[in-house]
Amino acid sequence: MNAYVSSGYPIVFSTKYRRPTLTKPNREEPFKCICGILRNKRCVSFPVGGVEDHLPIVCSLDRSIAPASLVKDIKLGATSYIKEARRFPHFSGWQRGYGRQGAHHRRKSSLEEMIDLQTENEVGFAREYVA
Image 1 (cartoon, helix red, strand yellow):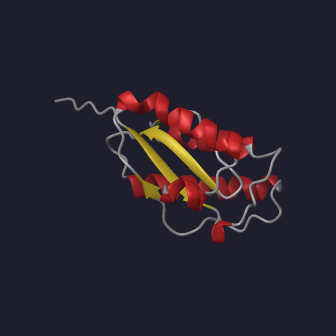
Image 2: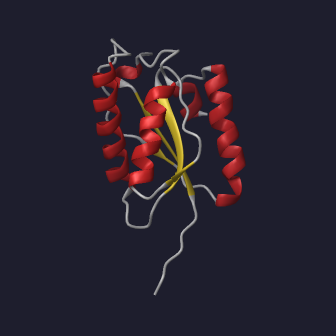
């Protein structure tokens, strides 16, 4: 028996104390690392973006992956990459926890637009997530 799941999940987590430590111009590098982690976990990711104090990720989870486990792996992998690359000297880790909302696959384009708009306008974590 096969199971088919197609849902895009917005996952958001912030830097420790929501400090703006993921500064330009090197911010794209950890996003590529995160895309690789998602690919290795058999999750389909939409473009990963983010701003100085948080990362919103939209991905379709493989049915065998628990969201909390995926976020843990992303945080560990991204932290390792960031510390090895030494491009963000003030980065001290991620805040505990994360936010996740369910979304229907038909909303994929609006979710991608949200990430693009947020990245362009540098929308802060508290304003974006509370809204």
